[in-house]
Length: 352
Image (cartoon, rainbow, N blue to C red):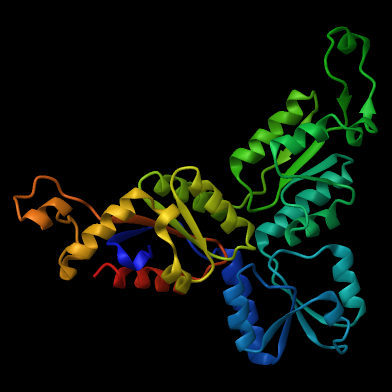
């Protein structure tokens, strides 16, 4: 069963789509591309495959480290929105490349927090995804920092030798209380696109283990807003569609949040909705509405309220009104507004 076969209506999340940092990075690239073509970025500027393809069509290309080695001195290179580790940036400067910094300002704040914790001798812990470019940049500011993504990982870390090497012998009074061994304070910060609840839960794990924790909540406000709006909307609709790169941490997290409350489909491009199979996604309500659509008047498709199936078959008075499938829409912070509008328009055409 395809989505085109059922009547539906859409509701756009209050906070959805590209954030300040992404818009800023795209603006920088657009301006630089007017001065120099082709233009290069150090890795994908943002995590949205469709946007990266659109940039390539405009002669802006993301390069790997090996490809950057082949650039001539004086070539212009844009640093991605996710940030760059200091040593990596120094190496790029040593190649005599002209660097244009498109790092998100909120990522820069997280980098500063990592640096401050490290310089103060804290045991730095980053809440984030190992291997993510933003996390890699943060590690560059706090060498030796640990990365955790869940409470389970944190519980293992909090009792591991990673902290025992920093242990401080408890005083006689403390030892008499049979409290946990005390360690150097943990400096806890976050990848900017993490969930608030996860960050707070991880903090509590360290505290429960008897560790002193200093925190810098570096989750950006745009992320918080999108997550809160998605959570609220997903509890009011039949299903959610999340638009944005599947390699995007913040977009993937939006999908995870929505799935806790309703069936959720994560797509990278608006045209993917055409092929979306509703069998597992929308469930029994979709099946019932498909039957209605096949028997009902085509001109009423997607109208609210709809005639129940029984009325259509028997032409008896309407007793209950059947509403169309309600789809909530949200999009990651790396998804341009025009992509969202295209998705809405595609769904709207199926409702008229």
